[in-house]
Every structure is written in structure tokens, then in C-alpha cells.
Length: 149
Image (tube, rainbow, N blue to C red):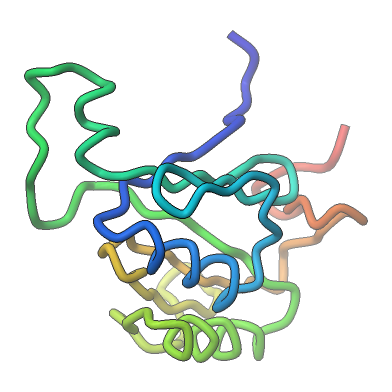
């Protein structure tokens, strides 16, 4: 297996709301869309997909639980080039219908970060570190992440 994630799919309880949040609210470019069934957004280096949550569970297995609540043990991360970008992204998420879970603040690891949840409760961290560098495509490098190669 090659070390990459091609598509991250989030199960959405309301497809129209999910599409509006990511496309209109956060400004993600849509590369495929059907309001009722699915949408794919092009990100730098990967894609984000939203698909009806009950159909996603059914696709995994007809016996897979279709409902659940609480923290799923996963977060998505969006790293920004400037410290001020953390608050800007949190504000953008709230304006789009998201909820701030942790305000922007100094982080124990030396950076600056905050968390928001999208309308379906998926948790995103927005983070900045002085040690991080980005290539021309927006791919994160530097510090403990190494250098492009």
C-alpha cells in the first residue's frame, strides 16, 4: 500500500447542509456534486467527500450501526501559514454553520490552535506553528514533519 489518503468521506445527516458548509461556507472547490447523493471537494493532495451517513454505514456492511453519538476518536486538521489564520478559519467555520469547540489559543506543543465542529459534528483542528513550512501546493512540511522529497 502506498502511504497516502486519496479521499476522506464524511457521513452527512443532511446533504444540502453539508455541501453548503464545505462549498459555500469554507470555499472548498467542488469537483463532483449531487445534492441528494454525494459531493466531492478537491483539496491540496487529497479529496473530501460527503455522502449520506445511513448509506455510508450500509455500504460498509448491512449490519454496521447506522446511528451513534459522541466523539468518534478522529479529528481532521487544517494547518495555516500565519498565526492569525487560526482565528480567521474558526470565524469562517462559524459563519458557515459550524461550532467552535475550543477557541484559538496557545497550544501545549508550542503552536497556536483551536477546534470547530461541522454541522454533522465532525471535529476539525485549525493549527499554526512557527516551525511549519508549506510548499507551493500548500502541502505542510518542516519541523518534525521533515522536508519535501
